[in-house]
Image (tube, rainbow, N blue to C red):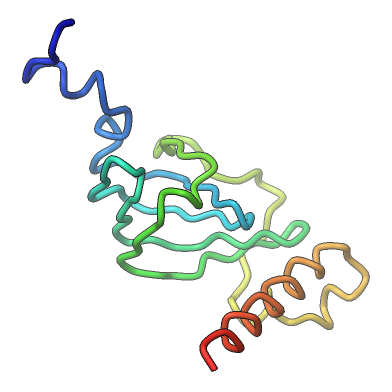
Length: 131
């Protein structure tokens, strides 16, 4: 059996190569978070700096700022590095405000509205568990 030396640390920990880089993190509940990876542990718990949640509805998108954000490792589906030199979205996408993207009347004819209903119900479930 051979033991890893100090030079082999980066070979055994795949997230180490992403430290101080801008990442996209896809969570189990479908949320997409972007931010700079500051720290992580052996359970893939991660800390993102300058994090934001990207919400996409049809051809509209919005980035909701979150600040410093801790992600539990068991909720992570995918982590990938963002290429800062490429555009993140296709040119037909339109950036809108948080209020506009959360306005359910605007999206009444779209199936993406179920995303907001699910998020709202999940929030109610969390509140009822606390009470």
